[in-house]
Length: 419
Image (cartoon, rainbow, N blue to C red):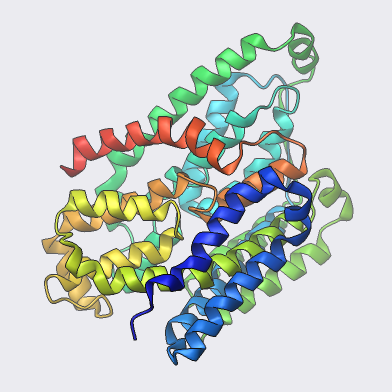
C-alpha cells in the first residue's frame, strides 16, 4: 500500500527541529532531542502498523542497526588511538593532512578516516581553529574523499553487494574524484593561509618551538579497526556482522588505557547524539523513500544528468545510501532489469555506465551538502562541539559553505563528465 503524502510530515518536522531548535532553544534541544526524535519515529511506526504495511519499516530498522553498529565500532575503536602532531600547523601541513584523510577514506571508509583524524586535526590547530576547518574536513574526509572504493562510502558498498565489481567504480570516477578533491584542497589552503596570516605572532612562535613530530599511541586499536572494516563484507547470517562490530568496540574500549581516552577527550555523547537522531531519521524517512520509489518511473527521469542532480539533491537530506539504491533500482527498472539479480546488474553496468556513474558520485559527493547527508558529518560536528570548537548552524553550514563552495564544483563535474 502506497503511503499517504502526509506520512512524510514527521520526517519534515524532524529535519526542521535539527536545523532550528539548537539555535532557538539550545538548552531544551540539548536535553530533549532524544525524546523529539523517538516521538516522531513512533508516529511513523504507528502509521505503518495501522496500515498493515510494516515491511518497509522493518527494513528501515534493519538498515539502521547496520548503520549505527558500524559507526559505534569505528567511533569507539578510533577513540583509543591517539595521534599527536607537534610543530607549527601551517596551511601546507593542514592541507596534506586533509589529503591523506581523503585517500584514507577509501581504505577504512569515510567514517573510519573521520573518526581517526578529526581529533588530531582539532588538536594540531587548537590555537587558531575556526569553523571552516571543520567544514572542509567534512567536505574532504567525511564525503568526497571516499568515492573510489565500495569501502569508501555506504552507497558504493550497497552497489558492490548488488553485483557491481569492486574496482569498477575506481576506474570510472578516478578523475572526477581527483578534480573535486584537488579543488577543495586548493580552496582550503587559500582559506587557511589567510587565517594563518591573521593569527597573532605569539601563536606562531609558540607552535614553532615544538619539534616537528608525529606520535601514535594505542596502536593495538588498528587491529580492531581492521576487524571492524573487514567485517563489512560479512553478509550472512543476519546481524553477525553487526555483532562482530559491537563486540570489537567493547573489547577495544576495555583494553584501551583510560589515559588515551582522556587525551582524546573521548566521551560517548557524540555517538549517542547520532544514534538518537538517526533512529528518527531512518524511520521517518521511510515514507519519503517509498513514495519516491513508487513514483520514480513516472517522473520522467531517464538521463544521467537528471539522475545526477536528483540523486544528489536528495542525498543531502535523506541518507545517501538508501537514496542511491532507490535511484539505481529505478534506473534499472526503466530497462526491465532487476537490481536484485547480479546478472542484470552486470548487464546494466556494461550498457548504461553513465547512469551508474552519475548516481554513484552524486550520492557520495552531495552527502556533504548538510550535516545529515552522511553519518560522519554529524559525528564530526558533535566532536568539534564537545571540544568547544566553533561550528556553523545547520542553515549556516549550507548558506556559508556547502551551497557557495560545493555546488559550483559539482556543476563543473557535471559539465565536464556527465553531460
